[in-house]
Every structure is written in C-alpha cells, then in structure tokens.
Amino acid sequence: MNALKNKVQLIGNLGTTPEIITLDDGKRIAKFSLATNETYKDSSGQKVTDTQWHNIIAWNNIASIVEQFLQKGSDVIIEGRLRSRSFDDKDGNKRYFTEIVCNELLMLGRK
Image: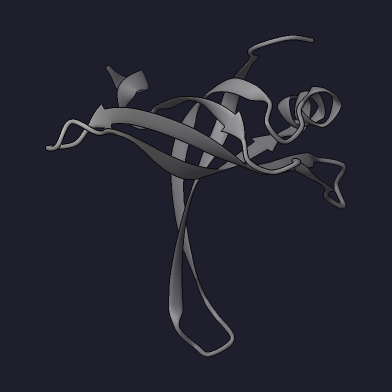
C-alpha cells in the first residue's frame, strides 16, 4: 500500500509545447500542461465537457523523450506524484502551486 500514498494517473493531451530546461549540473527538466476531459450530462440532459488543466514536470530521461517526441496536442498517459509548493509574489502575497512530477509516460496515437 505504500506505493499508493501519492500516485496520480492521467490520460490527456498536451496543451502547450514542452519547455525544456537544462540545469547547470546537466539535469534536464520538461515542463508542460496537460488537459484532461470529463464528459457528463447536466440536469437538463445536455452533454457537458469539463476540461481540467494540470502542470507536469518530467526529469532527465523522461524529459529527453518529451523533447524528442511530444508537442502541443500529443495524447499521453502520465503517472506520477503530486507536489505542492509556495512562493511569495512581487507584491508579497503567498502563492500556492501544485504540479505533477512524472515518473512514467506512455505516448498514445500515431508516431
């Protein structure tokens, strides 16, 4: 059960072209947004699609795969963990940010 403590699985498509960052120590990071859609019928029977946006971070080898093969609109399955952090903006207000640190990636669709 320990493996289930902080686990996220999402199927969606990239909302942005991945941003690739190389750190001073040579580690690589890929940052991108992922859209997931849920469809349901409202009380009047109308079909409604609810889109949620998720911030994704991928490191090293996965970041290299993201850079080579993914672009805006690519369909993927992401598995990872939630990470929340906070910072003070330029006005001194505390801001909170939640992202998913990807540890597995499966590309869907055509090559």
